[in-house]
Structures are given as structure tokens and as C-alpha cells.
Amino acid sequence: MPSIKVIKRRMTSVGTTKKIIRAMGMVAASKLQRERPRLIAARSYFGEATKMIDDLRRSEDAREHAFFTRRAVQNTAYVVITSDRGLCGSYNVNLITKTLAHMKGKKDEKIIAIGFKGYEQLKRRNKNILLRYVDVLDTGFHKDAERIAGYLSSLYASGEIDEAYVAFTKFETALSHRPSIEKVLPIGLEKPVYVGGMQYEKSAHFYADHAIPLYLGAFIYAALHESIACEQAARMISTDTSTHNAADIIQKLTRVYNRRRQASITQEISEIVSSASMLKDTKHYQ
Image (cartoon, rainbow, N blue to C red):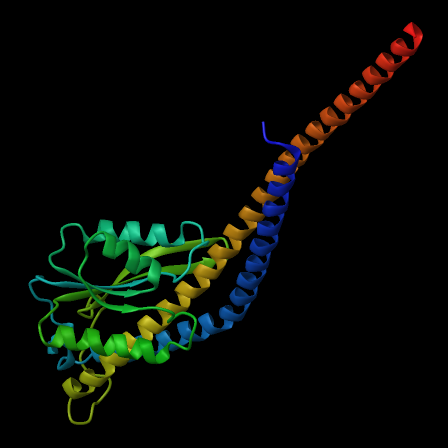
């Protein structure tokens, strides 16, 4: 059984940790509030880019472009977006688990890891990581999204990859986030296509060469905003749970401390009473 001094030290330690975790939760809540309008703007931006690609789908010329053409899959690229720091519950684990399950049966995966936690887990499993981005989610990442999109486009155009996926977490509500893996290359032609519509100067091929990297950049940009919103929401929930757990631990330690202190006081009183009785008996015999 630990001494009163040890119990007191533990209570102080847990109390300090509780204050730190609560502060982290407040920071996460503040960041989530700040991120919400940015997420709405990023979704709107991606929506406009999608309309541009839908117009391209209607062009018979563009449908023959390499980015729209399916081919035998030998190499697959993944852009995996996770957090740089922990204390966000199962946010990273859920996404990595789903990504690894999706990779089963794929040939020669090539990975662009955004976020240290995902990079760490994928590296531990000896996955082929082409690029690593750290601290992207803490800065303005529009240029990073464009850079990654350009890199993916060049890999696909050169034949080094035959398809590409983006693994990220979709933000639904502060309490609901869903790991998602979406195919970005080649561009799907599942929607009904009709000939006509937009007229492109030079050619639809020339327009697609510039429009598709822009579309990919918008997709990755939106996915980054979805991920940062989910990360902050997950951290807010995780820190709230940890704060409650710390409070429970302090409550249990307080009970133990009070019982030990009461037992110590009772023992001291018993010793004083016994000593007084012994002194009284000694005087009586004298």
C-alpha cells in the first residue's frame, strides 16, 4: 500500500495532467470552429472544379485523353492524409486500417504520406513511400495540394502509376467522421455523357492537360480541410474523455488518501491514549 506522501504526489501529478489536457481540448475546439468556414469554402471550390470536369466529360475529344482512359493496373498510388500529432483517439488508426485493407490485392503501391503518424505506421510495415509531408496541416496548404496534384499527374502521364487514390477522413459532424478512400485517377466516365456543350480553343485535349491537375489539386485541398476538421474534432472528444478519466482517478485517489489519513490519525490517537495510560500506571505504582 503506497504511503500518504506517494498518494498526494500522484494526485498532484494527475491534476496537472488534467489541466494540460483540458487546455488542449479548448485549443482543439477553437481550431475546429476556425476550420468550419474554411471547410465549407474548400468544398465549394472543389464543387466548381468538379463542374469543370463534368463539362470535359461531355466532350468526345476529351474522353479519349489519357487521364480519362482506363488501363491495366500494375502500379497504384495512394495519397494518405493523417495527423502529425497524437491524442486524437482512433482517428489515425481507423484510416490506416482501412487503407491497408484497400491495398490488399493491389500491385506495387506507391504512397505519398501527409502527416507524421501515417508515415510512421506505413514505414513500419515497409510500404513504398515516395514522398513525406510533415506539418502541412498547420500551415496554408494550397501550394502543397497543387504540388502533390502535379506530382500525381506526372506519375500517371509517364506511366509510372495506372491509378491513384486519396485516403482521408470525411467530416460529417463534430461527433461523426468517416474514413474514406476515393479514386482520383483515371477520371471516371460513369456519368451520362452527351456530345456537344463547351467549345474549347485549341482542343479539349489541351484544356484537359491543364484542367485535370487543377481538379486534382482542388480534390486534395478539400481532403486536407476535411482531415484537419476531423482531427480537431477527434482531439476535442479524446481530450474531453481523458479529462473525465483524470477526474475519476483523482476522486479514487482522494478516497484512498482520506482513508489512509484517517487510519494514520486513528493510529496516532491510539498511540497517545496508550502512552497516557502507561504514564498513569507508572505514577500509580510509584
